[in-house]
Image 1: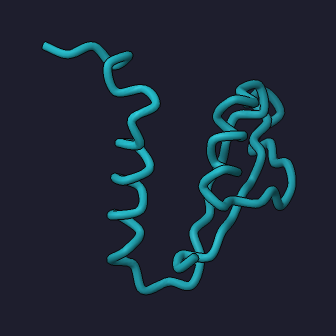
Image 2: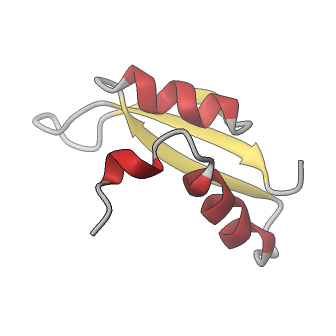
Length: 73
């Protein structure tokens, strides 16, 4: 069975992401990225997402960077 590392850098995640969005009728996509994971945030920025702000749903929860992008780039 292949290891996850075998797929890193292959574009598989972005291809799946774009395929999922290609069937949506909404104008934009929103997501949350844990503030403590800057590499994940950078990945989403490369995929066209822009930061909107920071949210923390509960006082003891992690802080999240809220991000958005148009569905059709």
